[in-house]
Amino acid sequence: MKEVLLYEALEDSKTRCKTCAHNCLIVPGKRGICGVRENRNGKLYALNYGKIVAENVDPIEKKPLFHFLPGSTSYSIATVGCNFRCLFCQNADISQMPRETNIIYGKEKLPEEILKEAVIHKCASISYTYTEPTIFLEYALDIMKPAKIKRIANVFVSNGFMSPEACDELIPVLDAANIDLKSFREEFYRDLCGARLSPVLDAIAKLKKAGVWIEITTLIIPGQNDDPAELRDIARFIVSIGKETPWHVTRFHPAYRMLSAPITPVATLVQAREIGLKEGLEFVYTGNVPGEKGESTYCPSCKALLIERFGFRSNIINLDHGHCGKCGKPIAGVWKF
Ligand code: SF4
View 1 (cartoon, rainbow, N blue to C red):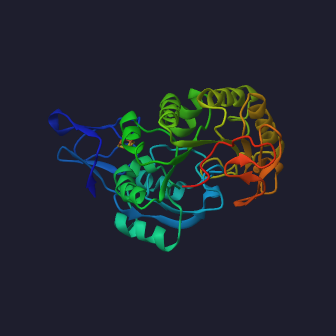
View 2: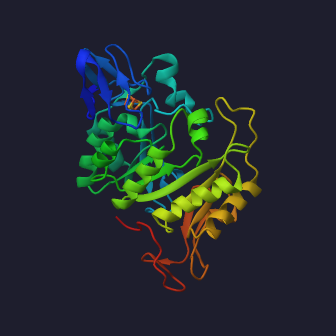
């Protein structure tokens, strides 16, 4: 348990959490929407600090990050809890646990122990992932700061619903982020996630402008966010922050409270990729369909195959110090750290 970094103490012992864009007003004895931040006598505490619920050595491609140290591994951690309640969550057992059971489960681990594991496993980065890392911001920052000194990169896999203040804390130590842009419709964020769209757009733009390497993911759910007009809106937004920003359009598998929704047809993903490329994005990837042509990286100029992928495996074919090995075009990304 640790006192929350970003909050205001208000009259009558109330607190206002400023960690994510919900900005919860929390009265004594109560928790915020995420279920892991509790007001105790007018002070706000992160109950999930240092309580690890998942810990794995993952390929960086699993985040997914395709233009950030390809072929490297990332020490990947999570605590329980999330500030969203997506009905289609793929990790609901850990993300919704505090909210649904009041339990904050996790194995106690100090920040230096996580760092040590990353070094032992020769990981190029540490990823704060699986659940929403914004809700374990204090713990993440206590790992990120020394990691940066040891030249281990820091990666957020996030829903992007963080406050501007949280972005400011993260920017000096965050190297890359994959952020979900789940939809371009407010109703989707409100009805399916219990959140809002505009703070996500603001956080993406802010982190990108600050120089954090950004890739965007949209999980395409049939009948919910697969309308070509909506996909075009998403693509146009990504172009507006930088056409070199990779966009991952990934396949939905029925999960959590949307078990009767259908799996995404491959044709929908292929169409989404075409929409993105047509709108001017340089790199659009189909995801969760191993073996699909759209998993690999091609030069946006001469179309040469640069990085071949199958699932989470990648094989650099024709990339020369961040340039296309055939025509010499610089390829956006972080190729060494
Ligand atoms: S992190 Fe977000 S959801 Fe959790 S208490 Fe703070 S403002 Fe509310």
